Image 1 (cartoon, rainbow, N blue to C red):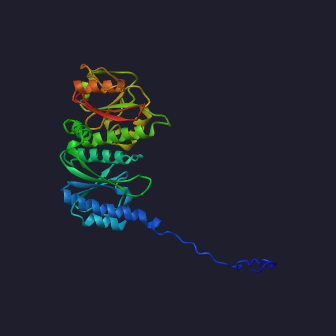
Image 2 (image 1 turned 45 degrees about the horizontal axis):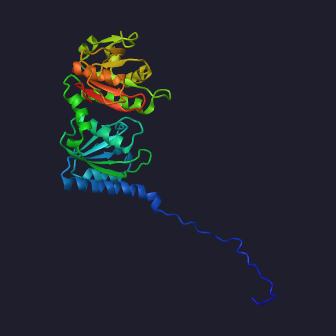
Length: 312
């Protein structure tokens, strides 16, 4: 441009078109990650001689390729779901089993812990098994974490599973349902408020002999068929009564015997770690003096503790 020239502005065409570029990887990446981890987990399980692969099944529902990957594998697979298998669902291969866990938001570690405990009590895993575990955030729909656990070194899981397995009078299904209910209460509370609770399972005659009512027993007088904890309707009733002081007593076959009872164990509770309250002391004492199992929810932290034989 020469000095004195008037600068000229050239406008872009009126109908200029712009191309929007989309990174298609963002749409497919979640499934790619999930599929890749499933493939590698089964390969890892074969290489390290793991007993099973535990997979968060809710993430892969409806994904035919992932179901295909699991179906063709010869490694024992445990599918973990917050929902029961829907009617008409495809039949699982012989090497696949399904485990239902509470429908609550759990961390990755929480998902794995609850699923492993349920698998142990159902006899799907043994105490000396090595397990490859796949999990992810429940809201993400992506399997994004893989961990290998030797159950023999997981003392917390080992003792919790023994609590029910060594109590011949407690049905594994009853223990699992009670644990699921405790997990829901610990996660959700009641009416927006945290709750503490104590469930004593099994050896009900001896437990009743070492207890006294704090309130009129809300379960008294009802047929056993309508007060079994395996009934989903009873779960809601227990949630309503969770605000009552005292313990729930559940018979080994699942019949809820009483609520709002004060435990008066004949055995003294051993020294407990600092920070544990009266519920923990009562659970410790009653399991030391009877053959019952106790599940305690801490009101302040939401932590669930299982007692057997006076020990956590």
